Amino acid sequence: MSSLRPGNVGIVIVSHSPKIAEGAADMVRQMVGDAVPLAWTGGDVDGGLGTNVAGILEAIETAWSPAGVAILVDLGGAETNSEMAVEMLPEDRRARVLVCNAPVVEGAVIAATESSGGSPLAAVKRSAEEFYA
Amino acid sequence: MHDANANRAAQTFATLTASAVLVNPVGLHARPSVKLTQLAKGFTAKIEIALATDGPWTDAKSPVKVMRVKAPQGATLHFRIAGPDGEAALAAMLALVHDGFGEA
Image (cartoon, rainbow over all chains, first blue to last red; front, side):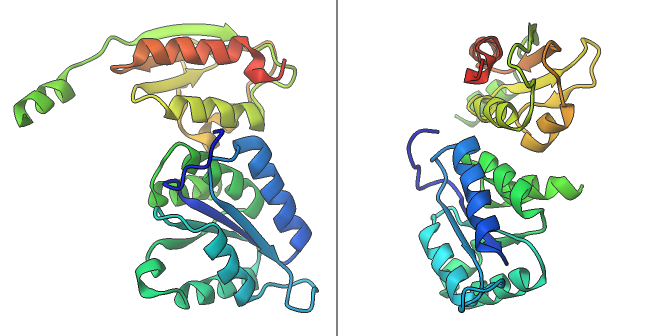
C-alpha cells in the first residue's frame, strides 16, 4: 500500500472531462494508496470536453506495468478512442491492455483495489465489472 | 514433490470465527471496505464477513461485495476464516476493525 509495486496492474482513467478524470484519480490515490501505477486523461486537444487518442496513449505509457493496464472510460468516444489507442500500441503490449465495462469512478477504485492486492489483469477487469453484475 | 503438494492442497483447515463491532463513525463505507479488502487479499486463507452469525457470508476479498454489505456504525461484523494462515488473518482483520480502520 505504501510503495509502488511495478508488478501490479496499471489503471488508466479516461473521461471527457479532465476534472472528472483527475478527481477519480485522486479518489484512487486516497482510498487505495500508491501501490498501483495510475494515470488519467481527459478533454480534447483544444482543451474542451472530449477525449483524444494521443492523450490516452500517453496515459497508458505512464501507467504501464508488465502485468498490464486496465482502462476505465466514461462515455462513447472515451471507449472508442481508448480502443483505437490500444490498436496503436506495439503488438507485444496490445494484449495486455483491456478496456473495462464499468462506471469510471467506482470502477477505477475497485480495479485499483484489486490490483493493489496483486491480482492479474483479468481479475482486475472482472472485479471492476462486478458493478454492472 | 507433486504428492506433497497434493496432500497440502487436500488438507482441510479449521474454520475460525470471531466478531467485532464497527466503531468508526461511518461504518463499512467505501474507504474502510477498500482497506478490509486489501488486508484480506494479503492472506491465502478464505475470509468471509457477515452481519449475522448465520450469514449471508460475503467474500472479504471482493471490494464490490464488501461495499454492498453496507454495514453501519455499531453493527457487529462476523468473520469466518479458513486457511493455512487463518489465525494471523483473523487477528489482523479484528485489529483493523478495532482500530476503526485507522479512522476512529
